[in-house]
Structures are given as structure tokens and as C-alpha cells.
Image 1: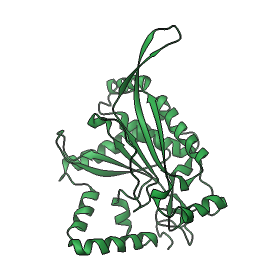
Image 2: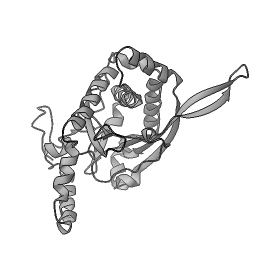
Image 3: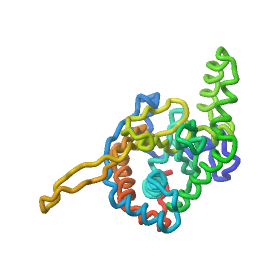
Image 4: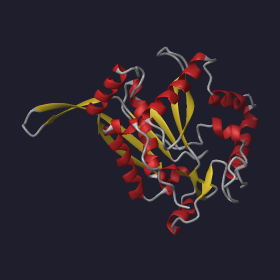
Length: 296
């Protein structure tokens, strides 16, 4: 593992994507040796979100001149704001060690065209803990417009096309070489910037397809520690304190998490924090007053 030439403060043992965490507890340091693969270490969290206030906030923003703002923008912004307070969810495991990622990278699935029959591709957003919902809105829209206005190809499409040009008898050993390079932090920066398998969070929006959320699988290749899936809006009829029937608008959330990055209580508190920002989206309109740093 070499020092990152882009970061003059990097030390021996750090990686291109982040710095090694050297002051963690023995239990966390032992985790990658006990649970060697990401699939061994994945936990699933199920929750739901009441979105009536969120829907009204989106209506207000659209009337103010942000016509394309939607739930996905808020989901990314809420995660980014949570990282500013709970940076431990932006860690990753590589080569049996834990690292704090240098920036926030979110992978999303978007359509290559404007039609409902258009194919899907992946885009990666590079975010900062100080980003507001408006920063996320501009950045995500620009990424989608760039894919749809160009050839319909993202960086990932071009990367996948170059790999699949290999004969199938060479592709499998080549992937083994990629895994070896990834383990030793020898993958080129250009590959890491395009790869959807190297990121802070991957979001799967099933609501746009009209179906409910699922427990998403987690990839052993790469280092994405959290996958988030959310489904279509559903109606729940409940009685209020006066005994009147109320129509609640709900969205189901499913998180698949590499539990090696932090202890369970920390992860649960972070997910509660993210849910709080989704319930109070107006808090995302301004940057955070302070940004917490991860441990050394």
C-alpha cells in the first residue's frame, strides 16, 4: 500500500481512497479476519418513513423553481449530512484493515434516456460533508444530464465495455488480477473513480419502478459498505388521538450494512440520524455548523 500522491498528509499504510484507522478497538480490528468476506459481515436493517411533511416540502421547492427535486435528492443529502455527524459510516474494509474514506461517494442507478423504456446505468457522485440539498440537487441533475445528453454512456458503461471485450476465458483470470490489485491498493485512480463497487453508499430506487424495497445484496468485490433500497409510496390508515382515521404516506427502507465498519449501536444511531433529516428536510437547506472527523 503506497502513499497517495494527491494527499501530502497520507502515511504509509493509507490507501488512495482513504486513511487507515489505527486507534480502533481490538474487536473492530479483528472483524475483517473473522468475517473475511463482505457477505459474511452484512446485516440488514428494515425501517419505514412517514413522508407527508417531506412531500409538502418537495411541493414547495418545486414551486420555488426546483422542478426536478425528488426523494432521491433528499436521500443522498440526508446521508451526506449524517456523515458530517457520524463519519464512521463512511469507512470501508480493504486488505483486512479499516479505513476512513477521504470523500463521500454515492452510486445511483439512472436511466440512459428520458423514456421509460431506456436502459439503466450507474453514476457516481462525489460529495462533501458540507453539501446542502441544493448542492446535491445540482450535482445529481448534472450527472444525469451528462449521461442523457451524450452517448448515453457513463464512466461505468465504458469501463464495463472495455472489460467484456476480453475473451471469456481471459475475463475470469483478469478479474482475479483486479481483485489482487484492489487488495494491494494498486488499482489505477481512473478505475476507482469510475467503479460503482468502490463508494460510500449505493442507492437502489425501486419506488420509480412501482415496487417495494428489497434487502439488496452486497458485493465482495470493491468496498461499498452500505446498500440502501427504498420502494414505492404506500398508504397506511391509522387512528389519531381523536379517533379519526388518518391516511399516512409511508416509504419502506432497507439497509444492508457491512457490520465490520462500526459497532451495531453506532450504525443504528446513524440510521436514526439519517431518518431524522428525511423527516425534517428544511435542515438540509443550510450547511452543517460543524463537521465531525473520524478517529485516527
